[in-house]
Image (tube, rainbow, N blue to C red; front, side, top):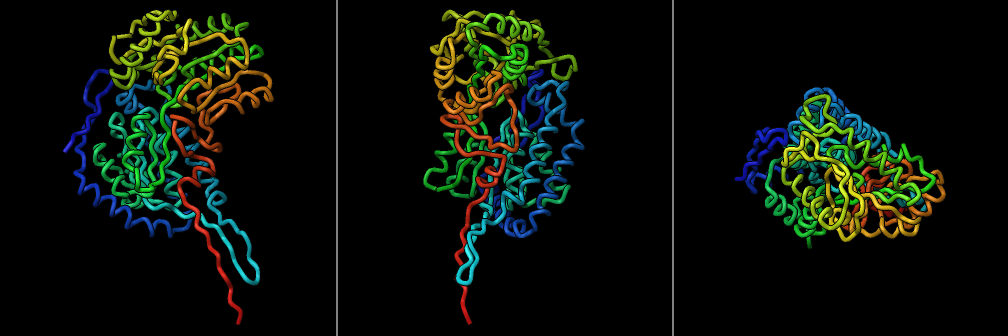
Length: 459
């Protein structure tokens, strides 16, 4: 048996420990979930949606407890108020579109034949959720999976060990049957074994590229459907006609918020050479105004990274870039302890030969490069093995659309960044993964099409 331990990045204290289920016990739990799924799917769609939204409301009632708990588990400052607004927005949107997104497609109904395509639940969905936005990332799959008639097994990240328990308690109290939504504490090996045994009908994983590869390896030959949201190295491009104040405020917030630990965080910025110096001046001033410290202090604007090893990776990228000729613009902040508390950094004189411009940082550092125009910017934005989002800054929507058509990414933003609109499909390409969540397409991925070709008889 493995013991999962959540270590607080605030002070290294133990927040919580949980024993993992042995593989046989995990098999039995999944079997109970599978046995309960058909009855859940047989309930009216609106009843399932109502119960899910009641679970969402129950989480909202816990928010005063959840916000400091998140700070202790993964370091986000309490001043930002947690994740409930986005959590509720995503679930509410998916509940609102469920009837249309899951409606039968009527192909024809005449004297001879009735032809219909239905969308039916996969069965048992495994949701493997990450720690960086532990409620919002979980709800992306949890709400539509349940509403569509699936049963769900949730495995949450060890760094946010208590989130899965809270979600399960809230949804069960709201009336979702316990067997239909189960939170589990299991090892990576046990999850791999269960996936390899085809215990699940769909696996939704949000996490690292390495984790995604492990999921794909475990599922090889099982034909289990997968949805994978993996790494990112998201670019911003500031054109010569951009609103510079808005671009600097939004892109730097996108790079630094949550200590840079955002799936769609801005990790590299390209600025038209005519605006480069002015943009850099604004960006440096914003970051120098950061207050690094205890996330439980309401005055703190940036807390520790979730784990010391994450901060060390970012430090290594920064040090290697500076050694190779990059210029660092932010002095070490007073709260930087050489461990999980890491000063944010802006780098210039960077190139794509440097890991900080090539590999995912997932921390509070951004490289900024001047570009001569759209062609160079497009080439550099596409010079990445990742493809989640890109943020374009211009007054010309047609120009942004033309550039967006040439960028290898899942989402194109114009004059905004780092936001997940639940009416749009959240998806990526290349090493960022495959599949898509939210929007009507999210329902399509959490269900399968089933065709009915019904020949009528005459009497």
